[in-house]
Length: 372
Image 1: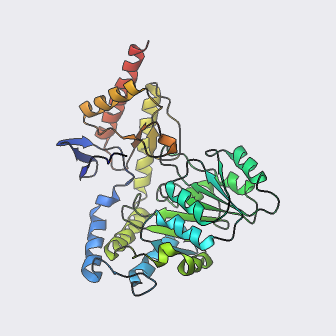
Image 2: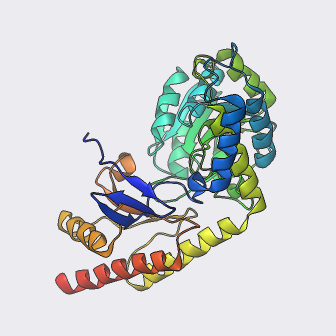
Image 3: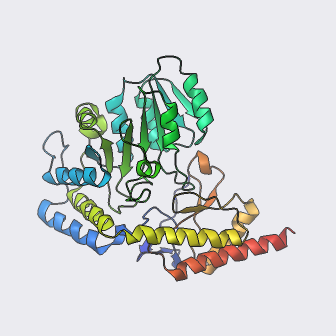
C-alpha cells in the first residue's frame, strides 16, 4: 500500500494539499470538536494539572483519578451500567473479546466488519462464520448451521463508515439465540445516531442486556481513546483478563480532559446534531434531483455509485478545479474498488454545501451528455 499524502487542517473545514487550500468533506470529526476551543482549553488545563502522560499501566501506578471521572461521565451519557476507557478505539473490541473469550461456541461476523472486529473474532478461539453484509436471512442460515445448544456472539459495526448504513440490531437479537450476545463496534455511531447521540443501540431501540457497545472518542467526540460500555461484571473481567488493557499505557490526561469537555458540549448543544442532519437531507435531496442514485442511510455520509476509471478521473479533477479535496477511498472489503464518500459536518457552511452540490450536479449533467 502506498502511504497517503499528508494533509494539513486549516480551520474547521479546509485542508492544505500541495500548496492548495481545499474544502474538506472527509474524515469523521462530524461536529468539528477536534478543533473546538472548549476542548483545547480543557486539554490545556489537564496538561497543566496532570502532565502529558502517566507513563504506566492502569494496573500498576497509572490509574489516575481523571480516568474514573471520564468513565463515570461516559456511563452517564450512554445510560450504561459501567464504562472502561482504553488507549485507542481499535483496542476496545479487542479488550472486550479477550475478557469474554471461552464463553461462546461460534463467532458470527459481518462480511464488511471493521478490522478491529476481524482481529477481535480471533480472540474467541472458536469457529468464525461470516454472514452477508446486514443480511438478516443469511445470518439466520449461519445461526442454524451452528447446531443445537450453540452460544454464538455476533460482531458488527453499529454504523458502517463506507455509506452510513446501520446494523439491524433489533432483527439480529431475534435471531441470535438467548445465550448468545452481540458485540458492536459503534465508532461511527456514537454521538451521531439516536435521539440523544447514544449510538446504534439507541437508534435501534434495543437494550444493553445482550449487547456490548464499543466506541472511540476520536470521531464525533473530537478527542481520543476507546471505550467499552456494558455491565460492571464485564468491566471487572476486562480489568482481570484483557492484555489490551493490562499491558498498555492509558489515554494521556489532556485527552481525557478534552473528552470530558466533548461530552458536555454534545449534551448542552443538541442543535449541532440537528444541523448536521439538515445538511445531510439538503445535499441528498439536491443530488437525487440531479440524477444521482444516492442511498438513504441514517449516517451523515453520502456515497456515490461506482464510476468507471475514466469517470473517477474526471470527477477527481472537477472537484480539484472547484476547490474541493476529492474524498476517493479504498480501505476495506466494502470499498475495494474505490468510492467517492462525502462526509458532512454540522459546521460546513451553506457556501460549502452549495459548492459541493453544484460540482456534483454539473458532473451528473456532463455524464449524461457524454454517454447519451
